Image (cartoon, rainbow, N blue to C red; front, side):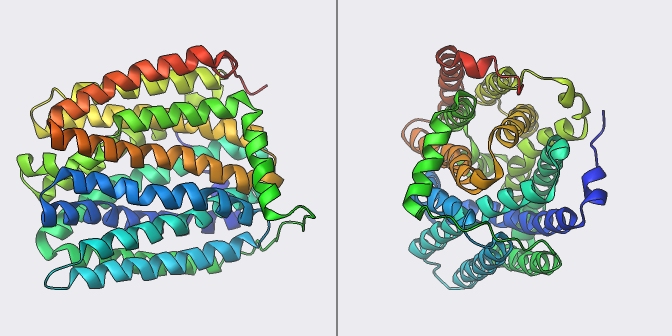
Length: 401
C-alpha cells in the first residue's frame, strides 16, 4: 500500500535527477506564492493576479511544442542544465526588482513569462530523459515518486513561503528560490546519462507535425489532455488564494491555502500502492476529475480557513489520482523517440488549463465575488468532464492493454 522507493536505489541517474528536481521545485513553490501575493499586495486587484495566467499562457503554447521537438533532437541533460541556469537568473531578477522602492509590475509579468517559456524546454527534456533512464516496469512507481516530490514541495514550500514573507518580506522568498536552483544544479551535474537522440532527416517543423498527428490519432491521449484542460480551466482556484488569505489573516494564511491541495495529494501519494492494481486507467481519470469538480464547488460555500483547507485538500487528492493515471497512460502509449514532442503537448494540456483557470477565476471574482467564482467553476467543470467522457468512449474504456 505504501509508496515504492525502489527506483531511487535502482537507478543512480534517476536518483540524482529526482533529488535535484525535488530541491528545485521546493524553491519554485516559494516563488509560486511570492509572485501572486506580491502582485495582489501591489494592486489589490484579483484581475491582475488572474492576468498572470494569461501572460504565462503564450510561452506555454509556443515553447511547449518547440521545446518538445528540440528535446527529441538535442542532448537532454545539457538542455535541462541550461534551462535551470536561465530560470535561476530569472528568479534573481524578481528578487532584485522586489528590492526597489516601487517594484515594477510590468517587469514581474515579463520575468514570469520568461520562466514559463524556459520551462517549455526543461520539462519535455526531463520527461524524455526520465523515460530513458528508467525501465518500463517502473513507470508507475516513478509516477508516484513524481507526485510525492510535487506534494511534499507544494506543502512545505508555500507553508515556508507564508512564514518567510510575513517575517522577512518578498525579497527573502525569491532569494531562497535562487539558492535552491544552485543546489539543484549540483545534482544535475552528477547525472552520467548523456545520450543525444539520434539525428533525424526530418526537419523540426515536420517533427512537430508528427507529434501532433500522433497525439490526435490516440483517443486515450486526447482524453487525458481534454479532461485535464476542462477541469483546470473551470475549477482552478489558486488566483483566489491571495484575496482569501486577506480575509483569513494575511501571509501566513496564504501559505496554508497554497499548500492545501498538495496536502491531499501527498496523502493520496503515500497510500497509492493500490493504484497499480487498477487497470481501467481512462475511467479513473474521469472519476478523479469529477471528484475534483465537486470539492472545488464545495469550497465556494465555506467560510473558514480550515474548512476551506479541508475541501481543497480533498480536491488535491483527486487531482493527484487523475495525474497518476494520466502519467501511466502517457508512458505506456508514447514511444521514446517521440517522448519530447509529446511531453511538450502534455505540458500544454496540464499547464494551459491552470493558467486559463486563474484568469477565469480572477475575472469572475473581480466582477462578482470569490465565492461565486469558486462554486460556479466547480459546477461547470463537473458538467464538462461528464460530457468529455461521453464523447470519448474509447478513452473511458482504456485499460492500457
